Image 1 (cartoon, rainbow over the protein chains, first blue to last red):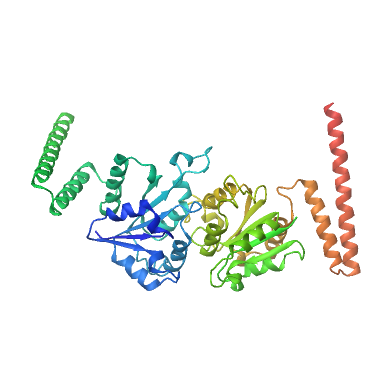
Image 2 (image 1 turned 120 degrees about the vertical axis):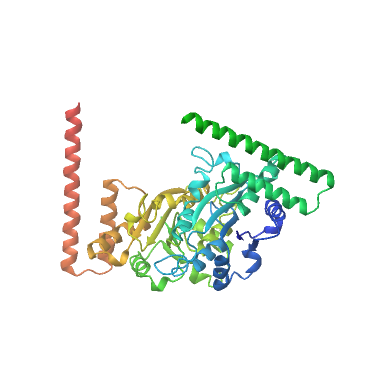
Length: 230
Length: 230
């Protein structure tokens, strides 16, 4: 699976969140595509963008929440790139069945996004224009990943975010327990290749063995359950 | 009351709706401010825009629905102009208590904007990012005026739209029956000055007299009702 990450951020290098996400990316099958860097004059090459979209299976729209929406360059991108005959309409549905996921960062506490609190609406509500756009382009809308107040996160929270983000970028949607295990196994093996110490590699092998044993026990349990039903 | 109409529309001269709305404007106390015409290079003069906002009492944001939102230049305007220290934050709430109303045009049938129909969400739902922005800037959010499929409107529907739009531009919010009457009287007198034929002026005078008579009868009825209650 090839993933295209379209980032819109006028001050990317100053964003700790974006730098953190960028550094966590796998080396293969992921394209990091930062609009403000590629188009400093804000003149978008529509053909390039459309070709890029067609080459990838999963599309990520990644941006900070500016006035409850994306920065303006990404709005321009939508208006110019997602046109009839390419993204929607009777002819040309070139994005059909691709998966699309939003990754939204905000400096505001997530609890503020609800009725009665300072931001009034939930983030999924505020993202409806994007949801409607993505679905109008015949793509599958995956649940957004919202990253709130990154700078206040503990190390543990950051590690959890890293796993969430890696799954956004590399994983199938809403994975089953078994798919999650497969994904972890692959990731752990990948890490191994990048150079673990012998001791750590041994730990990783043990971890994988343990996971597989758990899986077998689970399968046994499921089988017993099926038997009992009959 | 002074009204500022901020329009964002990349192809304004080709829009029948916008031309129709523009021609219906009163000559005084209204500023027509078309962003794409003023900033063809998309470089916004922030100080100018902020000064303009401060000079007016009612602010209209008028745009066609592009991907369930505004064209990108208006998003850029929001991000640059509505900054902390001017529009929100502890210091500088220069827009406080101004009235703000959206005028949104769409080529899609209004019935398509609902769950189960092609656009999935209602227009008020899709406008929530704007609602949240306007309220964060301490302005009063007035109910949006949605103009759908202007080119398919009958002459009668267009006349009704004209009255709705004139009220958006010149009237107090959610007017009572009495306020509506006063507004009509003022408008009709205004039309007279711009040069009615003697015959038409006589008709207008009769209309105003009739409206005043109706009002007196209504007042009498209300008085009788109050008496009966006692």
